[in-house]
Length: 217
Ligand code: BG6
Ligand code: MG
Image (tube, rainbow, N blue to C red; front, side, top):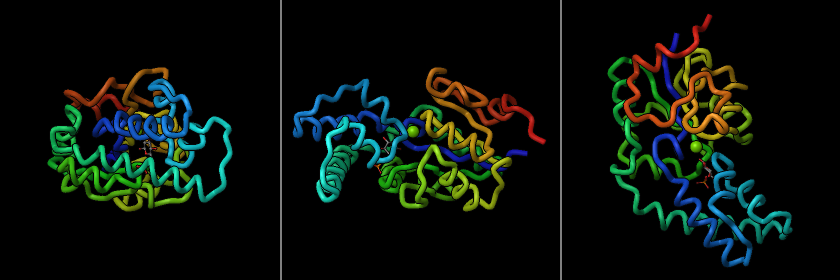
């Protein structure tokens, strides 16, 4: 039976895609590389380094330059996320986290971001999470299942006892690979492989979600 939830952060609990976009766009402009919002969509759930390589579209740079570009993008991102406050928790997310706690279930964060701790502190939801797995936790990033397996281990639960909530195709793939039940947030084209697909968490009540999950042995 389900004993815990593992939440992705960006795009599930808060919408940081816009801040990532602005930071990448500023870097791309400085480099004279075209970069659109549509291209930014493809970076959803993709770690910082892979995102940079995609943005560079085949241009090559020495390792030291790549590191400088990643640091520059992150400094812009950190500048933008200073605006984040409890108002930026997406509709339904805080309520769902509270319900999970009240029901005696566990909740963990499973985010590829190295800024995840800062973001959950600013959102004021750190206290509703029993464990945090972030961009520092594992080497192999999504779509490898490692991050979610790590989060489940921190909760002391088996994958079959956990539901992963994800908005990125790579994240859904990672969770399925790890043997988790998956709720996909967003359009079918992106998260259609998840067991349950929702447009967002607005109005998502714990009992309804659990009732919609496929039965597990
Ligand atoms: C994911 C975001 O959560 O974290 C990606 O969806 C981002 O857009 C990735 O690239 C890594 O984040 P950060 O904060 O470590 O650069
Ligand atoms: Mg995400």
